[in-house]
Image (tube, rainbow, N blue to C red; front, side, top):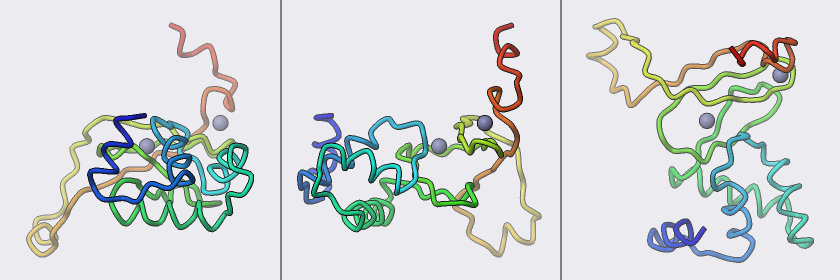
Length: 141
Ligand SMILES: [Zn+2]
Ligand SMILES: [Zn+2]
């Protein structure tokens, strides 16, 4: 956690106790939580925490590039503190999101590639997680 504080302090982010609680909740979080989920969790620590504070902090972190906003879940925005480039797999039933750290060989048509400055790409996979498909044993072999 100290490393996180140092990182944000060094980059000039004003660290209020509320913001720290939000950053602490996000650090290493693999659940891709929504703003509501983050709010519910940090509110347990900070009874006075407002949803606006959580939302504004998330927006600030997204604008700084410290947090990615995912649109893979049609029901709500989800947030990802892992800034390494990666792809996602979502369960259509329980909406759990899994990270995929793998490079896929995808090429744009040459004409588009020369006209458009492309910074990256993000691939979304859809399906059912082992729990939802009743296939929980499959991973054990
Ligand atoms: Zn599922
Ligand atoms: Zn992710």
